[in-house]
Image 1 (cartoon, rainbow, N blue to C red):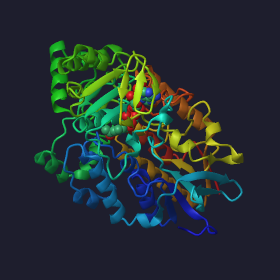
Image 2 (tube, protein in one colour):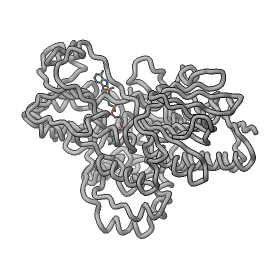
Image 3 (spheres, rainbow, N blue to C red):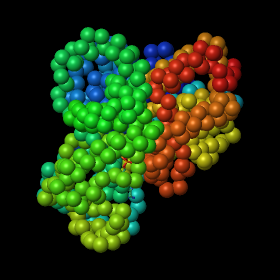
Image 4 (cartoon, rainbow, N blue to C red):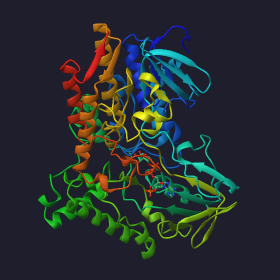
Length: 535
Ligand code: N01
C-alpha cells in the first residue's frame, strides 16, 4: 500500500483481466500504480463466477493476452472452451509471472472516488479505510460485476440455502440429494443447469424468458489446429483483430438469402454440429439487421428444441418467441435442452405462472408449490453502469456519475466521461466490450490509455477530459449504430431492461472491433482530438 501523503500516478480498481493488464502496462512505463480489488485474489469475473459448469464461450486459444509472446507461447489450454478453474489458473499464472499481486490490495472494495480540481488528483477510498491519491483513476471494474439479486416476496423467510452463481462458494457446495431451484436462464443458468441436474435429487428451473442457446461442442483442442496457430500466434491474433468480434471469423456470406433454402439449412446444421463462439447467428452478416434473415436462424433453433425435448409442452415453454435470436446475449451450452428430458427436472414457466411468494421451504407460484432445500439465483447483473455507480464516483464540483448518467451512460468512446477528468473506464459503456472478445478489447483500451498518459507526461499535461460535443457525438454514434440493428427489440441487460428503473439505452458499441480500434487510433494520430488537455 502506498503512503497516504504522497500521491501516486494511477489507481487501478479491479484485478480482473482489465486491471491486471493496466497495472502491468502502466508499471512497465515507470508509473507508480496501485490496485484495489474486492475479491481476495485476481481473476475478476472468473474469481466470482465459480458456479458448477462455468466455462468461457470464446475459444481458449483466443481468450488470452497477446501483449507478451512468451506468455502466449508458454500457456497451454486443455479444452476448446476453458472451464472457469482453468481461466482462473491462467489469471493466477499471469499475476505470478509479472509480480502483480504486490501492487494490489485485496479484499478492499472501493467505496469512494473523488476528483480534486485544484490538485488534479483523485482520492480513492475503500470500505476498509484505505485512502490513496492519484493523478489517474483507471476503473477496470468489469461490465458484469454488480449482481442483480431480485427481492422476491418472502425470500427472508426461506430456511434453506440461498446461493448466487456470481458469488458461488469457492470451497464448492454439495447439492447431492437436495431439492434445488434455479431462477434465471441466461448464460449462467444455462451453463449450470445441466451440471447440477446430474447431482441433485430434483431440480426445478424457474424460467421468466425462454432464451436461445446453441451447442458449444466443447472438446480437447485439435492438436493440428493448435500447431497451426502456434506457428505464428501473433500473426493469428492480428488476423482475428480484423474481424468484428475480435475472434475467429465465422461469417460465410453477407446475407442468409445469398444461399438457397437447402444450402442455408445445411450451413446451419453444419454450424450446429461444429459448435463454437457466436453460433448460428454469426454465419450471415445480416442476421442481426434483417428480421427475415434472423427469423431463418431462429426457426432452425426452434425446430432443434422441438426435436430434442421429448415433452411437447416443455419444448414449447423452452422455445423463445418474443425476441430475435442473439438480441439477448446468445448462450452456448452443453446438453441444456436435453436436460429437460431428465425425470428429476421440472420447468416452471414464470410468464404463465409467476412466483407469488417464497416460504420457509418452497416457492409458490400462481398454480403450484415447489418444495426446495436450496435456491440458486442466476439472475444476472446491473450491467456496465452498475459497477461504476457503485464506486460513488464524484467528478468536477462533486457531481456524481449517477447524476451524469441519469438518462443512461454518456461516455466518450466508452473510455472517458465529461465532467470526470483523468478517469478511464476500461471496456466501459459505449465501447465494443461485451459484444466482442473481451481480452483483446481490454488490451486495446489499456494500450490506448497508456499511450495517452505517455503523451501527457511527455508534453507536461496533467489533466484530460473529453469535450462535451465530442462525447455527444459518440453517444449519438453508438445509438445510431444500435438502431440500425435488431438488438433494441429485445428486453436485455444490453439495454438495461433487467434492472427496474434503469434508463433504456443500448450500452455497447455495435460497429465492431476493427472500426472502433481504427477510430481510436485516428484520434490519437490527430493529437487526441475530442479531448481537452491541460498543463
Ligand atoms: O445473466 P442474464 P447471466 N425473476 O441477465 C432472469 C456473461 N456470461 O448471469 O430474461 C425471474 O443473462 C432473467 O430473465 P429475463 C454473458 O455476457 C458469460 O446468465 O430478464 N427471473 C434471465 O433469464 C451473459 O449474457 C458466460 O426475463 C429473473 C436471468 O435471470 C452475462 O454474463 C457465462 C429475475 C439472467 O440472465 C449475464 O449472464 C455466464 C426475476 N426477478 C455469463 N431477474 C460465458 O462466458 C432476472 N431473471 C459462457
